[in-house]
Figure 1 (tube, rainbow, N blue to C red):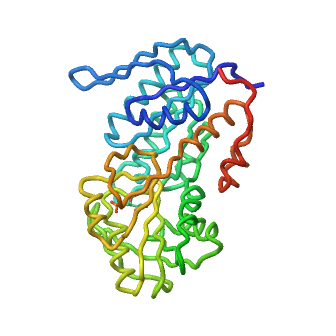
Figure 2 (cartoon, rainbow, N blue to C red):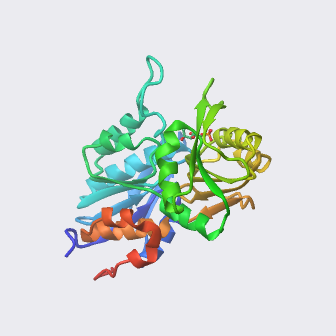
Length: 329
Ligand code: R5P
């Protein structure tokens, strides 16, 4: 028996289509909520359904506009708490501010920690998120965090492309663990590592490389693509080192400014991302793998008190992992 009898799903304005897809996968309706803005820009929320005592999942990645979506999520949590929800899980597959998890220079904030404090103080009981730039952010919370990885799903997609002679490449040192996870899922393909410098924010220089890519199909693996400069600079260096083809994979397609066009003009022949962030480009060189089935399964597991770690360990076979759930209301 679940701890909370009723499961309820609500979406903010950040990614309604993902929320709809999650609801469809678990055969439930999204709840009724108004999330709007006053004319001065302040966020306003009214939950229209009775959520008293329910196991409430608020689906709202803090994707661009990051500040607006974060504030919306915070007021949604506050409204849910004041409406006496039994348990509130903030589902933010993309966690904005995750790249500010430490001070790089003096007198800087640690914004990822501030966001963790805000979510907790607002009243979140649990966090469900995905591929945090820095896994240590999990430790910024004193409430349970389910930190999922989309890499197994993305590698399933890559495996179906039947690429030959693949070398997995980490575009910077921070990406090594993720790239290593990817290469293991691709029957232990070799790994190469690039060393990146950022002379200015959003500017990238690739300084050196460990590994061999000559004549190979390179698979660049990263957590997110914002300007695209990291992957484009990496691809240029890899081509110069003799790579035959370059394909890029990342969990979060932020695609700031002209990133989509810049990627099209780069040596990267295709870019594969998930739908943690809404993407409306329809660009042929960008492929999107949906994380909705995985999030739906995890939400069901949290609700029914079933291990999420077991699923994380073997997501490669998502369908086999889908469990039968007793009641769906
Ligand atoms: C850390 O640097 C991250 O893992 C990404 O590589 C980076 O944030 C991507 O940003 P951009 O696309 O702007 O280079």
